[in-house]
Amino acid sequence: FFFPLPVACLSPRSSMGDEDENPMKALKIEKLILNISVGESGDRLTRASKVLEDLSGQQPVFSKARYTVRTFGIRRNEKIACHVTIRGEKAEELLERGLKVKEYELRKKNFSQTGNFGFGIMEHIDLGLKYNPSTGIYGMDFYVVMKRAGGGRVAKRRAKRTKIGFQHKCTKAETQKWFVDKYEGILTN
Image (cartoon, rainbow, N blue to C red; front, side):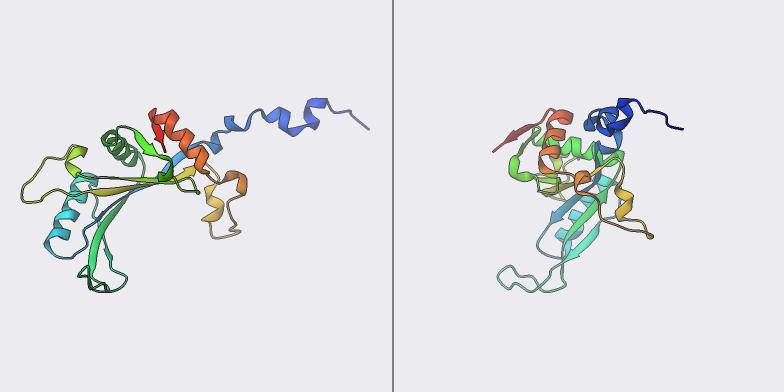
């Protein structure tokens, strides 16, 4: 028996509608990394880690120097920086505070080809932390890693692991559009 199919069923694109409507393709913040690079170990680094702990409510991780640079006065494997990775609601809230300091204005070159972006602030007290003379003032880097709402598991699972497809990767243009739409941000050259 032969049942003729309606024309709408034969063309898959027309039934799916516009690709942007797919909720799995929506952009989300995967994580926010805050980094304070002190350039020396000791008391200043300890105070910087205290600033990150107050800001995020998490224990920061220390980064070590890759090699000795005598002009900077650092030795290989000496702790010189601290960073913390934040996910979920807390990441969005801290990013909002960081962008408010920058007045929601980022440069186009702040965005990477893989759809992530970063920026720096000069003083941590701009984020709403109280100034403490014993701590001092620290600048910090914000780095935001973006992802799609769904489909990322294929690259993470143990069985049948594969790459994320080209169509599903985040691009620079998409992240810039997301930034302008969500935060009413301004992109400058």
